[in-house]
Length: 632
Image: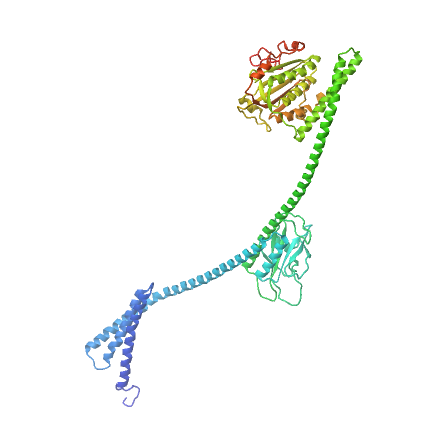
């Protein structure tokens, strides 16, 4: 055992090594004490840190480690038991704190890893937000290009300019190699190449409209990618070797638009479509992006709207030109019509004057001739001459009046007149004819009928005379009744029609005149045509007449602000003609009352008016006396 070197001999203490250990422990202790200070500073400056208690525990561990190294400085030399006890306590405390810290880190590490996971999640979110911001910036850029392109498109309303501007602006904005527009042909069975960007292929090429790629584009309202070998993509010549470019196509609705062709663009329905084809540069790896396709779709819609506006403008301009041509033609026709009317009126005026003079002479001489001694045959011939002369004179007057009514040259003569005298004058004309035909004629005037009124006396008398004359002419036997009254204010509503709207007032009143006869009557199929010029009802074929009398009466009544109508229960049952006219109220009635008294008929006519008359409603004149008085 003495010669064995297995056990290393004790090594005497080297002062140099002890000195190095001493210095190292000092710096280790200094470093341990400085680390807690730095941690305290970090926690104080940090706004949020979830593990403060862990840092405190870790700081205690470091302080104890530093204290251990510091106490160890006194153990390199002879030391007391107190130093050994302090050294032991420090090391035991350090061991406890270090074990507790190690156990605590086992629970903290998963939380720290989850924090790392959240950090990665936030990082991914940040990258996603960056991509969205880039997309938003791209969309803003796209919107700016769309607004600029829309402004360029809508700055003109010429369809060729709109399409050419669209192709140029799209080519510049998207950096296209070629852009073209295929428009439907006149027959609608094919698509024709109407516009191109680079003019590399002459326009006029056509493709069938029933191709699958065409139907695919028509059926989608989005821009789609089509094969570069499709007929729609043959918009550039094939020269050299190149990488096939990506080609996009989008439909362009033709909204109520004249269809485009090379020179002549016919009208098509609103469901027709054009196709816009866009080709990216070849020999490049560039692909279509979503925002670029969206820009193409927006531009296609804007082009459709601009084309519809241009079509509307062209249609309005064509309509304006047509309207101007029609106005010129109408003005020329109006002038010619006015000249013809003036010539006709002059002719009628001359002829009326020249024909009335001999006609009046014939009528007068015929009347005088009838008073002489004539044979029955001669009397019949003279009566025929007189009847024909009266008919021709009436026709001359009616034609002249109708001519003035049609050209608007007839002027109403508004003045005060004796209203009762008008009815007396009318009866003085029709009474002799009625006596010859043995017809009884009765006139009934309402008690409140004023003596005078303001209006056109001549036209009112002519209207009453014409209607009463028709009643006498178309009645072979029986009686004729003329009733005149004032329409009460509360009864005006009963006479309203789409053309006649009477209104009550203190300045005027409405005169109602009704003529009843027991003549041949009018069939229901002829009633709507009785006021038509030259119309002859079926039941009146045996009577002579021009067919102008009632037409003229209707015009006169309308000019006097009134309305006229005829009622009849049928052929052979007579008829009732009624009209309502507006007359002014006359204040000075004394003069007309003096002139009106006495109102008597000549003795030859009294026999027909002396007895009470029975009206068509079956009531006698006795019941009518309280309501009507006999003025004639």
